[in-house]
Length: 411
Image (cartoon, rainbow, N blue to C red; front, top):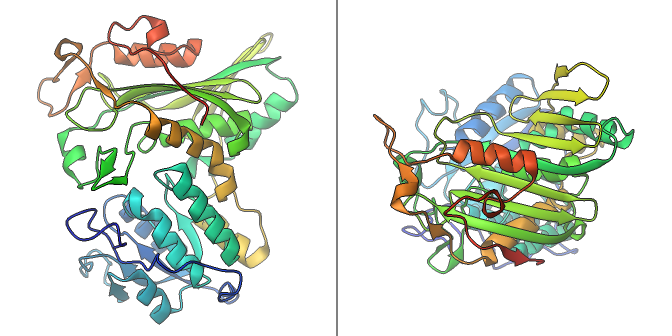
């Protein structure tokens, strides 16, 4: 746990963030002999996916799990019989195991402090998205990591898809004509238990600390980050303006049905997302051009190219695992796919959501509870989300009766 995350607050593992990495600190730990020792901080919930992935790479001889950082130790079944060191103190665990890599999948408010705890020891990082709950915390993390000289990969797995550079190449050679804009749509469903799984779930703040666990910034953050990547606008300085419309159907503090327009130095990007879909589907990003369009279902690595004078072309691409890419970077100098600088534009969106007015509750007649389900579904939201991605319009511009006046931010 961090100083701002005692038990009963975010209930997370211990760091030592009062100390700062510096240029005169320990050198980054050497990544020479395989398998590289790795510690996982946060092994339950979404962290189980990281645990499974570490096991996969361990089977390939690339990594060796040497420690798990959790408040409550994992049982033998959770560790699949493997014996590793366990502690609620990340710094002590990194010291005792000599880990070269730390995978951090803990509550959002703890990311910066735990990342710096590892960086100060020369430990390289895979940091789960979103990297921080505010732009200031993001800069503190990124600057500290840079000062320590360690490698840091941010866990936007969709940016490891080989479809991303393929789309960028199609745009660059004018296959779509002039690109007029990029839209993204995410229509997911989450039940009541989703918001009760942790004290920080569905919160904008917890005990005075920013959380910003909204639909655009956490569960469907990949839609935002992927749209920005396809645009080639990943750095903070690439963003010139942001408009948000934040709403909620659930009885939570944060937003669950929202849209955002990001103006970049290239063009406008509109992302519409909900966790209250009537019929949940695969999220996607669509690139609009004067001579065609590309639709990218980023969780499936599936691309559909539709161009004037050509038949539709559908391709499923491969994907580079981000932890595997981090190992290749440390061993062979392969370029990191998602360093902190490549998430600066996304963090500008997080900051705009953080600074926006509190999400407004949708009127009771705007949503219903589907039969046999313990969740809320917004009437007509699936079509509205798709229309926003197709027309690049916000909910209010599409005539949604419950939509808010637009909130403009350039921060």
